[in-house]
Image: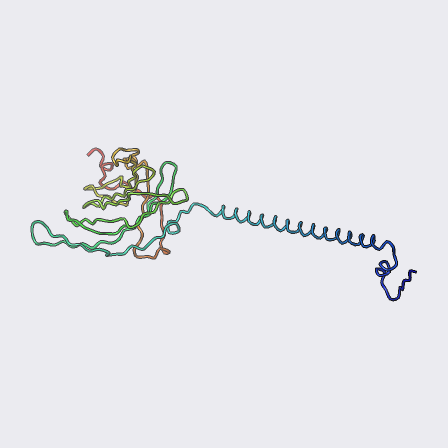
Length: 263
């Protein structure tokens, strides 16, 4: 006999205790639960997909920002790890061959930043030069060793080799050599004034084959066909205080044969 007490039991107990279809009711309840779980799982998955999609958009956005900020730098103090050259870094003495007279000279470190503009590439060469010797001609002529050389072209660093600096005798006609992509480059001076003396820093670039003799391009001719600008690092200021101006202020030196007409 089937007796159901509604006052003491719940509908579920009533179904279980009294109904012959209790198993089908339980199956229906299970299906509802399964359906509900599937809906929750589906929505959770959608939610994760949304988050993942959103994250990839953020990364993509960051990449764009990084890309847009990677511009070619034009301030050498932000490109190179520069130093302030030391004054009076080296003292040398040389005796004359015709008596006991001794010449004494004191020389400073020299740091140079020169522009580079050749064959579609633009950038800077930065060199640190240390005085290491001297020789006596009409005056004491220092010899310099290259402490450091860095080359930055078209927005990235590139390798150079055989970097050498020449003081340039009594008249100080400077030369700065380096090898890049199998070619030899030489910074020099396209104008010399009275007595063969320069009136400004190096201002032009010559390009040679690897033998250092065969011209690829003579940029230090009278037309100054490959112009450059060189600046010295000021030994009296900290690097962050220095302003590097690469405005081309070249002038033909007074006394240059081009200023003397046909005399």
